[in-house]
Length: 393
Image (cartoon, rainbow, N blue to C red; front, side):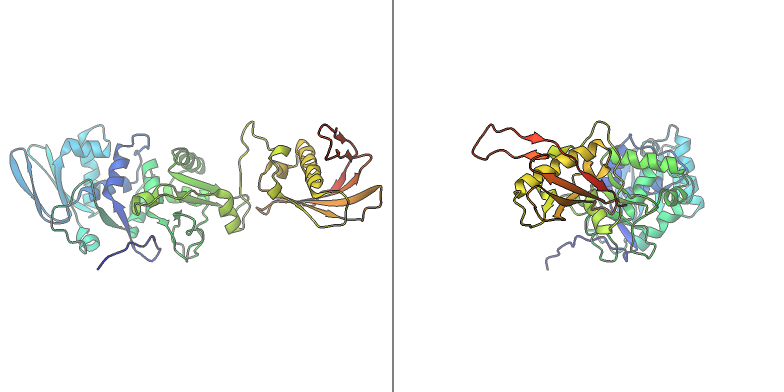
């Protein structure tokens, strides 16, 4: 019978599937710091090398039996995995795990070789039956979610611990979690189905300050590892993992559109200002402009020119919505054309629930805009007149 992997990572599953290659990639990524009081990274490293079934390994001219959940390696190799400067620091980490009952280990051959065993390995990985020793650079293992809370609670989380905590709590395509249909979103299983979290909540979870949490998340976003979506006010933030699908399901990753997520969540997004970036009238597209049907003798194409000019003027006056390419401009007549001028209402609508604006425009053919003859290619365009308006918050 053919087996088809369903692209889902649901909340009800009490264990997370972690690929060994992913952990080994994290070991070699020296740009992410591992120093801290939490031991999540160190424990996952040990699990990523544990055997699935009994095998044999030859070291120092001797053959050692390696059972399920066990592995044997030189102490120097373990030291490099943990990124410790000295070997006694690696032994200290193993001692901490042994004291808590997570592992048992022995040091052999004059402190040159370490053999360790993951104590609860059969409980989480006994369903996987392999006919050959598991390769160290392929395959995956299951890791219980409850164990993550224990490990990160042991002390201050490092940058690597934070990234792994985000990774393990990713949820994808689960109907019970909002926003998970758009991509793998971080959800800490608080029984609300809402993935929104605050920097203060994350600071308490990781034993860090809010400033440190913001710094680490910005660093991970700069490295293209996550997409951070912050909302205005006290709504909080959402975190998406960028490379989750390619690692977990071997499919193409999805691009996270922050504005689209904000519209789905119906929350005002916080978009930081970038230096030198402006949106002037030439960036107002026709898709943003709606002209209500009327009996006005002014063509819609000319009406759209008016909206562009007004948007440019309001942008210089500091109206923020005129710098956003998502804003909608709706032009509606207030009075019929009487041969001299007409009055229009211009509504500027923000799609993210922020401030909306309403202006009343008086348009005259003589004083405001003289439209060129369509058959006269070099006919001049004269600008003038004035508009008046009221702002509605």
